[in-house]
Amino acid sequence: MTRRLWIAVSAGAAAPLAAAPAAGGKTRLRSALCAYSFRKELESKVMSYADLADVCVAHDVAGLDLTVYWFPDTSDGFLLPLKRHAYRAGVHLYSISVRSDMCRPTPEAQAAEAAGIQRWVDVAEKLGAGHIRVFGGVVPQGATEDQAVGWVVEVLKRAADYAGRKGVILGLENHGGITERAERIVEIVRKTDSPWVGINLDSGNFRRDAYAQMEMCAPYAVNVQMKVEVRGADGKVEPCDWPRVARLLAAAGYRGYAALEYESKEDARTAIPGLLKKLNQTLAAV
Image 1 (cartoon, one colour):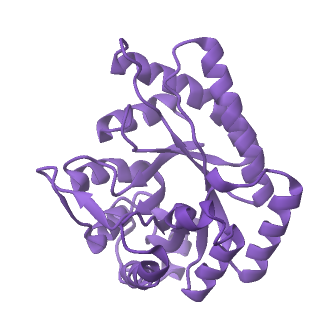
Image 2: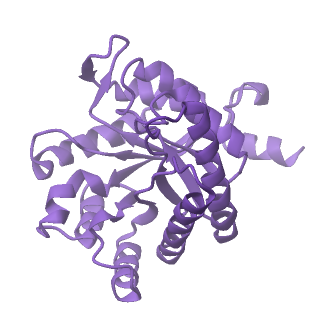
């Protein structure tokens, strides 16, 4: 019996190996919370990042994606107590989200952008996070998308070379601009050709045909953001069908976190508990 077959049998896999998801074996989805969901509370200091770990505990959520925009600093005095608090709470600080704009036309600007991401790789490593959510940026006026793809690839290659030495994966988010359409973001990831670069798949950021575009990106996903709303084939906003998203992730062989990123109008502290319960139920059913 081969090792792969032994793992499949031990896991109780009933389907033939040839029919297994792309990642091999059964899918494995874990719930998470994105700190951006509490952006107002973090910005006003009504809540702290440590408080978000406690929210995860209260609602049986496994991971916390730390949007870094409201970090007071990146000193050990801030990072290490937060890491300890999360560890004692049994919450995995698995990801950080940082600002970046990789549509930089000159080698000097590309090197500077890559260096900025590399500094956040050091922060991720210190926190024990294996993933960083990054953004491609907007195509500059007068440039073409094809040119911008080359620039983004160059920045990602430089940043990934460093990130890989630290064991940190970079997830390029579909977030408008050069990453507005699935085919472009897949092109960027394929051309970067690094095991340390994938797609941070945001269910709510496509401007139309959200499910079809998610399906295209899912085989390259290294992290997933679950939104309350999506845009359908006609571009109109509609409630996000979370079971459908979970099924297409499973079909692509995705294993990893699916993080609630709440952006709607209702107060986050009122809305999020029910949404986390729904997220856990959705992922458990897959």
